[in-house]
Length: 310
Length: 325
Image (cartoon, rainbow over all chains, first blue to last red; front, side, top):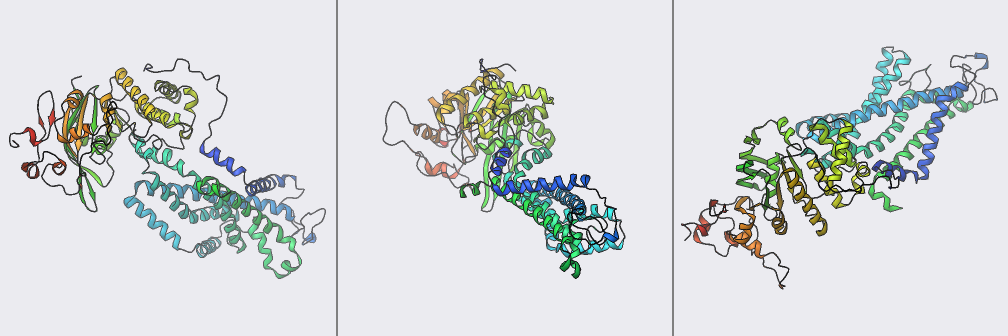
């Protein structure tokens, strides 16, 4: 193809180097304005660094038992004290953090992939496909999740699944229970996006359905997916804590914040040895709160209506 | 300039709405020759766009093509499988939409959107597609093509976006370009540039253009051949000079009279009296009868056929028939 009206003096060198700002970049610039979001991001980064690298600097290992040294209050040797078996609480909190954060992320990823995929398919094809998916969602949403998780947890206990494998099952359980909310949101967005003129234009180019869904429609729903995913990580960590607290999620000896907090079940530990349960509790609190700050800031950044309020 | 590229034969597209069946395209027949610009004129809701969407087979529910044939190079498009049709779309038949502001996907770069049909239809590699895309951006007269390639739609003006739409449509060297009111959403200076661009392209690539418009100025500037539609029917069809010099149908005459003439000032422009008839459940009369100055008895009883007169001029009006005299 030759050039009809090609501009002969096309110069690119003289142009100032300005990187094109994608809608995402613009939104993240907005997030940077929010102090709470910065606080949340910093706290989360700290939490990650401490949990994933901290254990390497600890003089103790997870198997270091010292029963004579059990239930000691915080000291120079054990900054956060020791538990009834003489294990270092600081180390256990960090290792538990790895597990809890991992559970949060995997559960979120399971939930986001199922939710956005099924939501997009339901919204794009409409008709009977939509009906089937939406009825499944209705059913999932009308089952109370806590009793269901408790039942599943006790089945797992009954089958005597080893604790190391059990955490993976917990991750998927949490993810599978939380996708319907996101699927609904994505479906709603896709339903309105598919009627936009640019989709008609995409259709007139002869694109396949998969291209239309994954390249043209889903990227437009990323704002709500990101917001939802951020909040879902916090939710999953909280839910994992609840389950582990009840002894049905991650079970000892694998530490998780939830099963460490369950020390508070014991009246003597609760009253006399707060170093057993306060550190993991504070960690859950800070982590979930930070995720929520970041999620809220992202929502404000992506929502055009909330910008004017400031 | 002689072979028919597209031939509509008795095309009927209905919309099944809650208040009844709307015959949006009602027994429409006309053809577009290779390398020709054909303008479809008519007021809003007369079926121009639905005719074009029927050609692309993209009529959205509750609309449905219920009859007729659309021949593309002698092959009936309505009988093709969806997969074969998808191959034609964007490749041999491309389309430009009315509103450039909303026709580009806001989250994908310009480059991605131009390269996409190239990669799908021409099976180009990423680098080849990028090179070709940048050529196309230059072709439609946008400087700094390499930079535009990486930018997002919100960074471009309306005129530039319409040029990008044209670049996308041209990417696979289509035989037919459907332009659905391509200049309606643009201001007048940009309109002129876009029309110039389309004329250049037509000359260069011998692309046939089916232009949908309600702007007679655009028709006069662009068209070789004109089809006038009213309430889902073709009421007049003629080469552009013939139509402007010698409009036959009273509706066309009214349209031409309603156009402002720059040299003489009028206090009030001519308007065609009355309203477009309700498209639900139209009867067996001439649909224009209640607005027509020359309405006769037969006009309310029978529908006129589209008959050919001198100079390839077709019209559907009883004024020119024996029965009407």
